Image 1 (cartoon, helix red, strand yellow):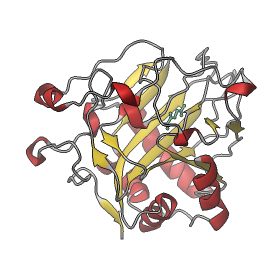
Image 2: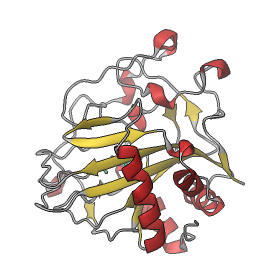
Image 3: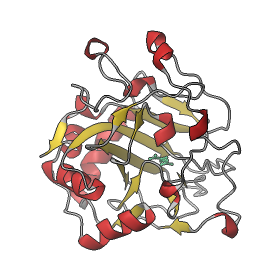
Length: 280
Ligand SMILES: O=C(O)CCC(=O)C(=O)O
């Protein structure tokens, strides 16, 4: 299985807006294989799996031959490095998001990814792949153009708006005071207020993807289709300037730390057996 190469126009859009749509990123055969692998996973969720309103799971690609092949594809690695403008790319983790029919997450859960992750930098890119067709009414991912250039983050919250706790064990002591990294207000309702930012909305066929920066504000809202589910699979890559980070007082995903025997240090490059090099 191999993905197609990015075009120069897609790279330019990513650099300007923080996101580019990637039509026909994988073909129909690949969609069927990836969806079958994700269905197997949904039937047997892992330790980070979660089925409440919608299904999520993360950090399992390397356990499945089909998913592994997709995330470690050398063309994927080359794409990630080119998009980030980085000389190298490592696969960081994968994340499944599946909404059944009529799953209305009433509010959009506008958020940036980076503040949830124990990492900092500009070289962090996600490829969100639609495995089922979707429109803005049926949970297509939407973006706020240019929001990746904001100086500060919105605070991590759970998708239902509640607080989140992370058990970092002894590493919690290393977390840095990061209050200056955050704005005090929650994100505005970008989908309702055109003044708040320029919305980028796409429709996706199965096999289309969006490539977006880890600081870009995004959300998918709910799936208003009475009949069809929406399944999407995000894969994330880190590049040269990404560094380990732990922020005090906000959720920092413990699934995204290096192996315990590899140690952890704020500011260290993102090197771990958990994050295989995919480029060069
Ligand atoms: O698919 C979704 O609804 C959310 C995706 C997302 O937030 C992400 O990939 O970071």
